[in-house]
Length: 137
Image (cartoon, rainbow, N blue to C red; front, side):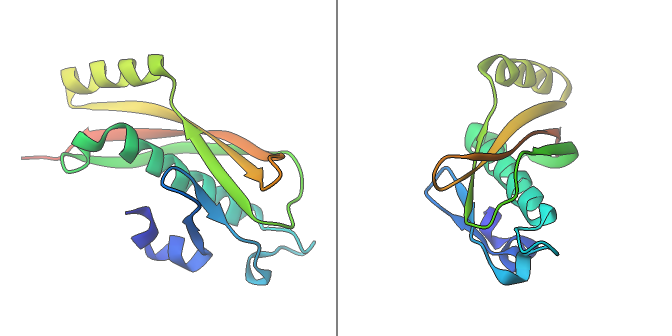
């Protein structure tokens, strides 16, 4: 589903495999230093966090409206090559989210994202907090 979002298509984010997204280096995505623009990397991370949510809670996809509440990345080094993303939600966070969601019909969940180059060098890390609310009937 994430690959059908027009902005994601514009940036050129694709699937590396079923669990990970990748952003290939492209001159159109470079900044004034000739490296991948921080905004393009942020888009990759945010999109990976959404994919992670869909994979963790597939039964909720048709029932909820997820909205990004906040997100941030700590950039570790400049990137001049393709970057792939991984995401994770701790078991404790998943349980907390489901308990609150089932009780109130809304909850937040934090997804941790790591961006790496093909040689596994971490170039950015951050957390994305999603507000998930049951659709009105």
